Image 1 (tube, rainbow, N blue to C red):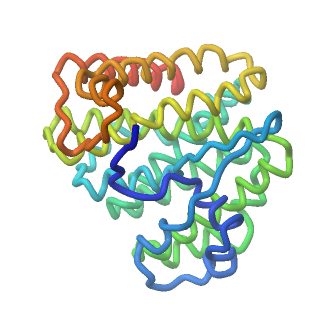
Image 2: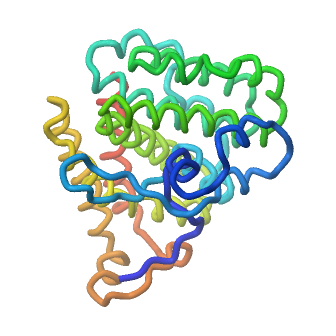
Length: 295
């Protein structure tokens, strides 16, 4: 079965920049107009596991936010996780990692909606969560905070700065043998992005947003595989895997998706229909997972 994607690629930006001969870190740090697309588009890259080197293509929080912004998703600030809640997540490594991902998604959502003061506040939330994960140097190097303030009204520049931070955090996780933290953080970012998109679609019924939402829900199978590669890393992993498996099963049970799978047909998510009850089932599951992450 092949799938018609709305935006290519589905990668981790930082890994693409490191592994695929794209922009170097020094190029990213050189702020200036280049267009958001040039920051986000790179060759495909992969996240491999320690055990069997199986590779999984995963997007970054920035890329998912970009997909939804291009589809016309509105900005609803009440959907963001409370930026003042960082301290309450210092209860376990899992909580720190998953909420690092959630705040990364919120930051990206603010950035692409040109909410720069909010972006600054959510960057600080990411920095606070990152500090508890040993990422201080990623956020403190190259005068990141000062450069962000200086360029706060320049979308291209601040996206480059955030991309640079993501590069550093991914490299640090790799060096510290913490690939599982990257996977958990991505799952948090993906869940937050799905939650926001589902709530936004419920308000305005924008068909383009629905198409992008279905496209990103397709990632649930890959997320499950990536999580299972690290299922022994944290005590909360079995529960997290089960929750994402449930969302994946509900996605595959959508009548139009199931028919395409059975016929091995290409999925065109922009033209695909989904009943209110099918969408509500998925929405309830995503909301439940997100609630478990932030509480």
